[in-house]
Amino acid sequence: MLFPGLDLNYIGQQFESSAPAVVEASRASGSGADNADHSPAMLEQAMLRLLELLTIVESRGDMSADLSQHDIDLNELGDYAIQLLSDLSSVAGSLNMAPQSQSLEDLTLPMALWIARHEGELRTLADRHGKLKAEAISPR
Image 1: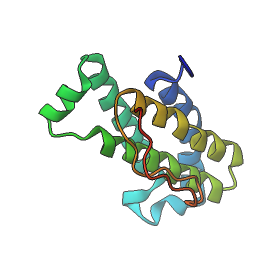
Image 2 (image 1 turned 180 degrees about the vertical axis):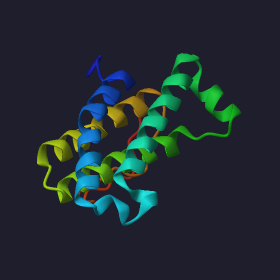
Image 3 (image 1 turned 90 degrees about the vertical axis):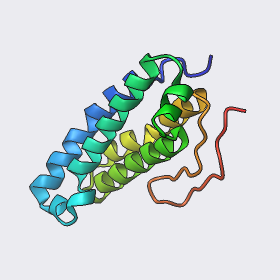
């Protein structure tokens, strides 16, 4: 299996090794208060909650049945995860935090692979500058 260790645990660990520094730097610079709904702290919390939700659903076994029972679309969750990572990577870049920006951007591939392995599709996949768009990534 390609990339066997790229699971939600790996993604969460890598995310937690970069995101807090970005949130703290944003707070220190005062730039995180401009838009509270899209502040680095809110982006971080949203990603942590999303990872928690995906971990819970994955641990129950039949993901597709569990998600559809609650009217949750794995494709939308995957796109949302990619967007959160990309947005926080952009924030890190704007704060001149190149290592954290790259680390967060690099998590889009493991996240895309996780979604694909669980029969999800990503409708959009953007690099941190928003230049790269993919029609779909599918496990088929």
